[in-house]
Image (cartoon, rainbow, N blue to C red; front, side):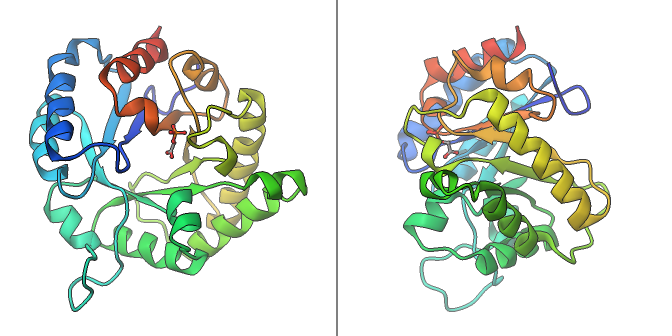
Length: 254
Ligand code: PGA
């Protein structure tokens, strides 16, 4: 199995699936199941903004980090409804998703906005998880690598990556997200290898953590983690239920 410094990354994007009570119930259930989390798993949970503080209070004690699903790039001001990177950091976040495809496609987030979000996260000590991936049309048109390259370049070109900060990129083909139509593991590996090379060109040196996301389940997680350049998974639907998440965790380590 491939890992990064001996660790597999299992990241749980709860999206808008769970309300405040449901989030806290699931966090407490995870805490009661910590024995099942092997030491070589690095786990992070991305709850809704409303529940991440209380979820973090429960999960930080068992070595599980919390992260933001989105952020705004200005620190403070008249931006009704937005939450800044600094605010997430102060509420206990270690990570932040940037450029998730649901943000890009449902909320029309542009590559330039993703760049601002990434820079803002970095500047305040959050580790961004940069999400990239092509639509089914772009894949059918043989443009997957071109689209991903543009997403990476706009987000990262010219950045001096802070020493010691993890560089995490999640490859999440849009057509695989929430569809049950997961990307074949060897195809994901091909894209991950491509992303690794692109990151070396863009940042000159890089030792990225590369996650795959898109319909990951207990029955396919091990196949992803056995690929050379897949160090972990970013899971949506199956991470928001205790049983399916524990199944992923168990299958990831055995
Ligand atoms: P999914 O979502 O596991 O439900 O396909 C993955 C994601 O959006 O991060």
